[in-house]
Image 1 (cartoon, each protein chain N blue to C red):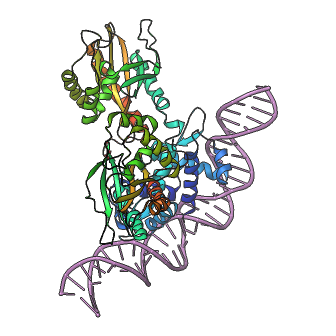
Image 2 (tube, protein in one colour):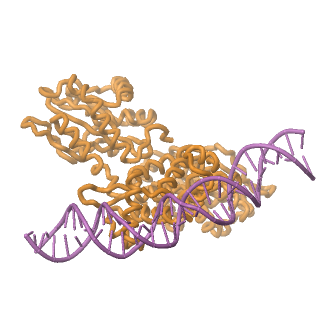
Image 3 (cartoon, protein in one colour):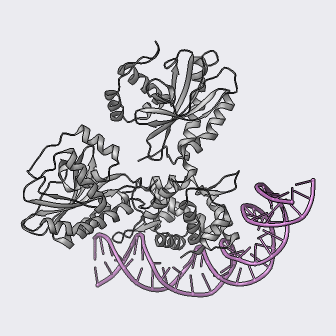
Length: 256
Length: 256
DNA sequence: GCACTGTTTTCCGCCCTGTGGAATTATCCA
DNA sequence: TGGATAATTCCACAGGGCGGAAAACAGTGC
C-alpha cells in the first residue's frame, strides 16, 4: 500500500465528505495527518484538478477533474447494469432455486433485460426483452415506489390501469397505498397480480443520482412461491439490489 | 508535486479513459511508467476501491469508490450552479455593459435564478425567481436546442405556443427550424420575441451527464442591443456557458 | 494602528518509503 | 507438454516524501 497515495485518498475523501469547503487544519483533524503533509498532498491534488482552493477564503473543496474522471469512468462497461446485476442474479437463484430477473425502467414500462433461470423443471419463464406495465409486477412496483411523489402522480395520470387478474391492484388509490408500504419495507410483492399462479418479490436499484432505474426480482409458481415464502425472501432481494445500487455509485445516506 | 500520487492519478485516468478493462502492460504503455510501479500503484487503488480487478480476466477497470466519492463531491456547494455561474455573469456584464442572467430549467419553464445588472441607467430588469416559457426567450431556446429530439417533440406536443409580440416564433415548425440553427452556432438570439424593445443572446449549460440544465444570457434594450451586436456577442456567451459546463463536470468529447 | 490568535504556507535535514529491474509465478495457446 | 505472454513478487538502493518548526498571512479585538 503506497503511503502517500493512501493518505492523499484520505484527504480527497475528507474534501468530498462535506458540502462546504474546509480548511487545512480541519482536514488535519479529520485525517490525523500532520499539517505539513496535508498541505503537500492537497497542493498536488489541486495541481491535478482533483481539489480546488477558493482564493478568497483559502479553503479547499473537491475539484472538477474528480467529476470529469468519474463521469468518464461511469461509461465503463464495468458499470453497466447487466454486468453488475449478473452476480446478484446468480446469487439469488442459487439461494432460492427460483428464476431471478433484472428489470430495467424504460419509459413507463419495465423491460426484462437479464435472467438467471431456476433449475426446477416447473419454473418461471419470461422472455428477455419483454416489456410489461409497471403497476402489475413486483419489479415494476418496486420501481414505482422509488419514484418521487410528483413523478408518481404524473405516471398515474397518464396511465390506464387494467386488471390482468382478479388480484391486480387496478386503482390509483390501492396502488398509492401499497407503494407506501413498499417504501418502508424496501421490497415489493406481486402475488398473482399479473398472471394467476405466479408470485414474485422484488427490490429497486438506484443509480448514482438516487434515481430509480431498475429492479431485481425472484419469481416462481405459487406452488413453491407462497405469499409467505416470497415475503420472507424480501430482505434477501433488498440486500442484493442495494449492493447493485452501491456499485452503480449510489450513496444511501446523503444523495443530494 | 508528490510523485507517487501524481503517477497514481495518471494510472487512474488511464483506467477511466476507455470503456473496456485494461491490463497492466497496456497501462505501462499508456503512461510510460515502469511495470512494477504501475502494479504497485494499482494495488493501492484497488485496496481503496478506486480501481477494481476482474478476477477472471485479471484486467483492471475503474472502481466503485471513484463514483461514490464523486457523487458525494457533486453535492458540494462548490458545484452549485449559481456559484459556478457568478463569475461568468460578472465577466459577461463587465465585458458588455449589459445585464446578464442565469436561467435554470424547471419543468417546461425557465427560472431567472442569478443576475448581474448592467451599470447603465436604461437597462434590462427581470425579477430573479420569475418564470417564463422556454420558447420565447433566448435562454429558453438555448436550452430547447440542447434537448434530445424526442424530448423536444414531447415538449412541443404538450405546449401551446402563444405570440407575445409580432416577432414571437409561435409555430412548432418555425421553432424546430430555428433550433437547428442554434445547435450549429452554440447560441440563441431573442430579438423582441418576448417583449418589444428587448433583445438578448444566450447559450446552454450542460451537466455532467450531458443534459441541458441551464443557460446564460445577456439582454439589453434594442437601442443598444441591435440584432447585429447581439449576434456578435454569441461566441462570448457560448464560451462562458461552456466554461460553466466543464466546471459542472461536463465532458464535451465523449459524454456517454 | 497594533498586538494577538488561529490560520496557511514554506523550509529543510533525516530517513523511511517508493522505485524499478529482475526473478518468479500464473495463464493461455498450440 | 512446452513455450510465449502477461501478471506478481522481491529486494537493495537512493531519491522522494516526511513532519516539526519557523515564517508569512489573515482576521479580530482593543
